[in-house]
Image 1: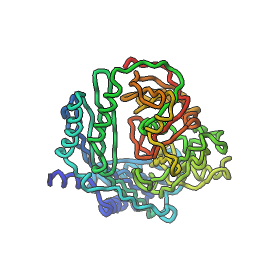
Image 2: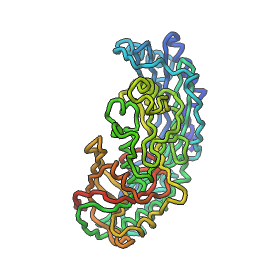
Image 3: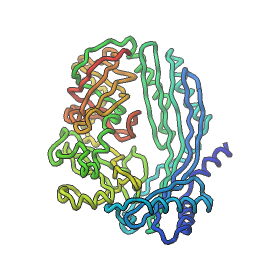
Length: 470
């Protein structure tokens, strides 16, 4: 265990070590404007199927990415060689690539420390989680397998943990560093004709209650046994948080200033009017409880909290530095804030920025439990999660996909049967116009989108188009 811990820690570079590497990069080209991004760490995973462990893997490493900028030209080169020769070589490659680029009139001078803003210090690292070994992961897997065996079910899933760091330094004084640990468990319980699923991840392994997850997944598999078939059509749905997160993740890229400027956002032509129900308020806040990631963006700009949607009306969008500068000279000047918000992606890129710290806000006392939502439903469907989601219409945000691992019929305020899974065709915009109830927001993770702080949701008129065979 001691040697494994030393190996893991060797790939978690301290802020001082990152600064030392940056100094060596600078010495290789003292006259160039340089930005150096360092990232790395380690992760390990224990996978199981048919109630038995099938795989243990671990990976570790770190890389240095150098961006050279000269006037309106910039380019990036990356290496995992941290010796002097390796660093000199990556600088030479970045410089050579930058010299042959076409000039970009929208490229701003490299971010200066004076304009980068104060970045919050986010404590998201837990030593015990970072060094959790194969034996401890196996014990968590065993707890889930024991539930499956007790219930006569077949289980499969994965338990992973690790830690990562990221840092950004540049020749104009920017210096940022962040480290974070994680633990994640996913479990599927299968019966002869049914299944149940749960997934959780946190920065601390102590928050991942593997046995409790297994009990919920097993109950879903039991309750959905011998599923009946219900006809396609519009239903009142109760979406658990994982299903909500996987649908709403498709909206994140639309809250981008560059997407608005390029008229590829579903918000284009819709700002200023109430787009969603009055019960929908969504913010982007990297410091919120349940969120992950650093408090700075791909250029080192401090992240600012944004009110994306307030009582159904779009208020803010994310903006990288270059986007904000373009926005100030566009038709949007005076209609939107035109300051950088700290959501820019690493340069060079074609996407600009993204809102990635989504947090739903629900008024105190207004949150309903899933049980209360079920009790309020005359006829509808309770959906555990969705999968194989694809975008059909980008402007209307029409998505198609299927339910999976626990879909239930609700009648007269009670769950009465498991049902065969259904395919849906649903606009996310219309979904958020039709929300009847929201649960208490919490950290939610699915399989089709990124993590967010999301609630369970009851909505009417959700469109199902066909029944599957399972």
